[in-house]
Length: 351
Image (cartoon, rainbow, N blue to C red; front, side, top):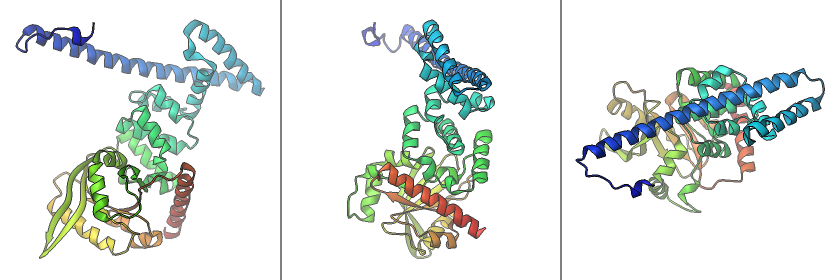
């Protein structure tokens, strides 16, 4: 019998209140039990993978591992079902290879399901794997969201990927141990705004209108933690009026984030404009306990040398491109890899 078939007592009825209380108890307990079962099964799979991996290492022939997995699978499937097929056992072996630290797995299993882990274990770059696992834990991504983030090359688009490996490791360690997000883990470049539906020629106002029309999608692209505050935020300085295109607040960073939209390529003069916005926000809008406001200049193209010479990061300004159409994955990958190499090379020159 479905709930629709149950006759609902009157709102004032004690029986109705009792029924609702019991419903909540059942649903809450089911959720807790499901989480506990998932966590237990995840550790089981890790331990099975570890045990098989140890046995395989004893063999001297490459075929030895295949024999072990095949023989084990045949017996386990008979006794416990298809969850222990040859393919599944290989996932478990790969699991322990990709996540050899039991403590890290134990911490992640509370938020990440076995399906999450299967999306992560075949990422070859350990830093990329750790980035996605920690961001998934912090932002509580569904398995679908995680796969979408991987497919959109979020790691390569995040500012942290431009940093040296030791800096990335340090940032991820702080995230894992202290849940400490930094702007480098939050800000992206480029931002993919293909959902806006903008084609060919459009004005800056068209871009802003489209973002507000698709605000939910824009917030998803910005990342978890962003809350919309204002559009065309008016500020008065002396006798002049200025307008901040979009103003957000980031809950984890505890900062106001001002976004300045530009249609063309980045220009050096944009720095002074956004610095003025940030100084005003810091003086008049920043509340006790908040960090200094940050700015994002979203433009159609970047001038890397100018951006580096201006040392915008010291002013709390992040410059990023936006794409109104998503290029083929191969082209995007090539472009992002080139950007990472260029950024790291320039870091070495300027340090």
